[in-house]
Length: 227
Image (cartoon, rainbow, N blue to C red; front, side):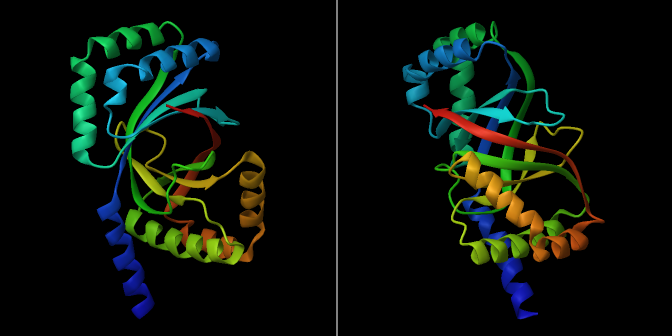
């Protein structure tokens, strides 16, 4: 009982570190033009004043997701995100580069995501394994995932980030939450995932959450560059 109380307390204390990540997912057949345009945008005074991280990711083996890439801005607070939005609509530079980007991309989805629970800093991670799922009992699912993932990470000495997130705005009809597990490279990401699937504790965890979550898509997200 004491263990359960401590775990629940830890889950809710995680919200004090909550961040917001805006995902702008798109499809493109001209990635070089996208990268060039983004570099130009991020060299502007508007981008330099953004209170957060700025990154481009590529989706690999992305299942039913039509997006090929994602531009992501992550913010430490509500105020930082609000400042970003206000500056976007008020910046001529941002609008000009936004219009230029639209020549090379087909927007797929926009979402503002926030973690429900997580461990470790995700900014150094270069590869993320993503599981998108429909969850009917979020508090219970987060509790079970937190217990399983921390025990697994301790057993295999994993130092990268992992957690449960959800779109606080821009929810996709197919899923309500997503789990991510970070890694320093593709090789490590695949190795860790294979070990997880074959570990007996994963089968026990899956049985516990089988009735409250349905996995609808899996993908690999690879960091292309930071700005």
